[in-house]
Length: 210
Ligand SMILES: [Zn+2]
Image (cartoon, rainbow, N blue to C red; front, side):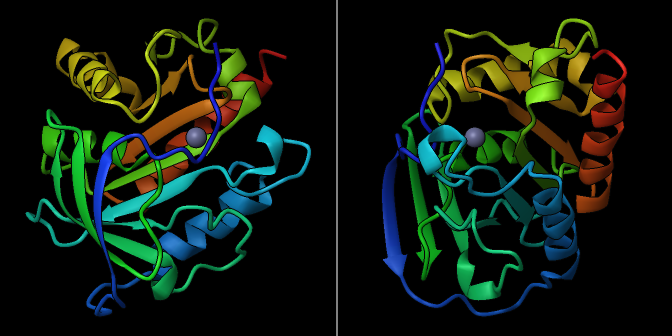
């Protein structure tokens, strides 16, 4: 079973208001542009019924539980600007609700990002891409994965991410796939760079399995 992109499944309280630019987007935008060029983030009429795919977030400040994330349906944008980001103020994972601010609504996959930030304050960045080649070789690469029956963007997904993390197998890869979400790959790290590099590393390894 695979699912559509872009459908927000959590309860969202969103205030449509410009976010104060108290963060730097330089690294996030540079990495997003690279992933965009590799067609790991984007929008393509031939893929996922033409809906935007992939998203990036970073923790607002080192110990904050708040994070900024690319807005919903911003996949086609080449270079992201602060007004295309949303600020997640609060995420209540067990109650499936999220409070946010921004001119754009946060990505439909924000709850999965929130679940990673809640696990460890060392996690400073999360990147979700769509890579057919990494996803296809999940087992060959012995990647940690979320089972196909777990729908993306749900409490069940957040709980599964936590279970994987506590099982210890995520520490080695800092990357996992979501088998119920076509081509879905998530990487995280203490910087955007470390999360981005993980994706590139596994992209090269997956390429060798072809
Ligand atoms: Zn996705």
